[in-house]
Image (cartoon, rainbow over all chains, first blue to last red; front, side, top):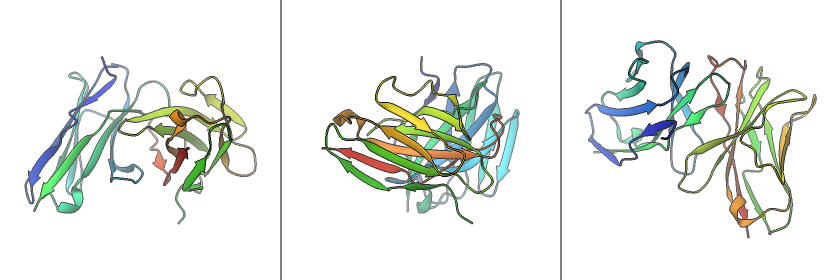
Length: 110
Length: 115
């Protein structure tokens, strides 16, 4: 079983709609959860971090964490073509290193 | 407001040569992490360093790879006797604290091609 799992996609969403990205993790001691955005050929860019159960909102982005279900998600409201990228879920579990999922490729259709 | 800096951005080496990748953390950050991204694969942790100390090198191949973060100057990831399988993007990240609640910010990466 992979430590951090994401649906690889591609996920296609119409412009203006809500994009929903999901991630599950296997290590119950995981403490910190992050979403990174990576454009093709570029480096990962941190867009959200979340540490406690519930929702965290930042502009058009909302991260949701459910530690009992070992599940973290990212919602992107009012999706824009510029949101088209690969979204990486990353987890820190008891140490300082990030463990990444393989990413979900998101395409926003104009 | 300089972010994490890496150089070179692109590096071409022949098999058997050495590759040296440099990383300067964000201002105020003293924790450096190296990750590798192979083509069509996810990001994998390699090593975590603080000034003059290797904290965790559990992701680093046992042979040919080494890393340092001296008291002065950038962190260096060194790959000796490169092979084609070393071709990848190497990213450096930095954080202000080592505790897991602190975010890691990535540099632009060094894309290594071994011919």
